[in-house]
Length: 344
Ligand code: SF4
Image (tube, rainbow, N blue to C red; front, side, top):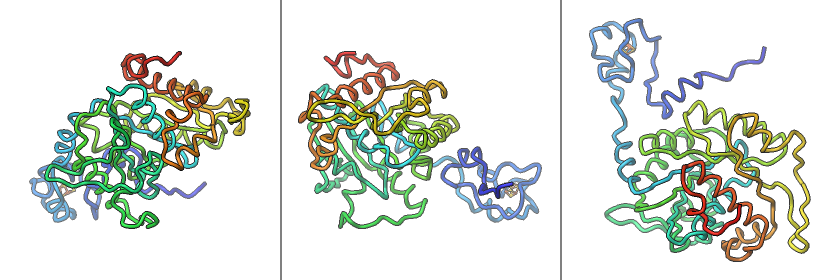
């Protein structure tokens, strides 16, 4: 039998995502009122319990910052998480492109992007605002505007040197994400896209916990067509199910290479087991579409240019618009209002 790596069950972690439950030195006795309850350590039934001192001194009650976050995000209509099971599937690129697609399609729509990939923030570079810094005022931190209707917030803006490595443990990451949510003055936004690191780690638990009361519209989950990526995305979908996050849909990224000269499409990551569409069917989640790899997209990201403005005829632009329309439909919005004029 393989050795177990689990010290806590998934249910326990999700019930106590930020690790606020005190570290007990003995099992909870039968009549325990709950180590996180208001009475912990002081109730009659706590008398003589070896955990009494720990429970009595542990923080009690709900996190008051969650109320602050809920009020701060009161002007944000739709909060969307962008998730992937593994790195290298183009999640941050897709987040940036979805944001640009939403913003470019309708100037009346205001979009925000929050980059929670603390160890590898790449959104500012992709949206052409890498050299910007944030402004701090009495009312909070102002995001950086990549376009008139596209706001960005990332840890990248706070680094004195963009090549500095971020070597932080979980609690510090949680603290920064909480600060982002509490202190950034997003104002009125139609959409806030939250770019997360790959996998299911501290950042995901923090974002889900802090945003729960203010409402998450759902998650867009990104994969590539090959089985090695699909394997990991199954875990991501399982995380969403366990954490109660609605999946708006699965996007298959890098689905074919489009030659920028002749527009011929070639599969580079073969969908040997059916790709994203088959997985979406198997897992019972919507399939939002396949986005081909266009080398001009990588170039636009490197230069922080809008791919939508520079290459409006790319098959990748058409595919991204369809993904946004599918996402809008899943949120109960009229896709033609969100992306006016796109066929399909
Ligand atoms: S001290 Fe009280 S709350 Fe804490 S474990 Fe013991 S019985 Fe439960």
